[in-house]
Structures are given as C-alpha cells and as structure tokens.
Image (cartoon, rainbow, N blue to C red; front, side, top):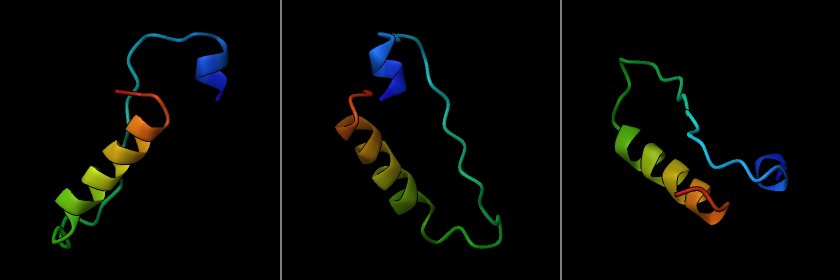
Length: 43
C-alpha cells in the first residue's frame, strides 16, 4: 500500500456517503470498514 511504502504514520480520514433516510445498516457498515482498515495495517 502506498502509505505503508512511504512509512506514513499520521491520521487518515474515512468518509462514508449514506442516504440519511436509510440508516438501518450504518453501524454494521462502519464496523466492516474499520475491520478492513485494521486488516490493512491501520489501527
């Protein structure tokens, strides 16, 4: 991954575009996103 190649150790920001009228899966979606980032070495 590019950030690992340059030894980046700062913050990253993740945006999740959502329809505010459909928030039934928001927690599950962000949980999966966080797990993916951890598997990639962030967190």
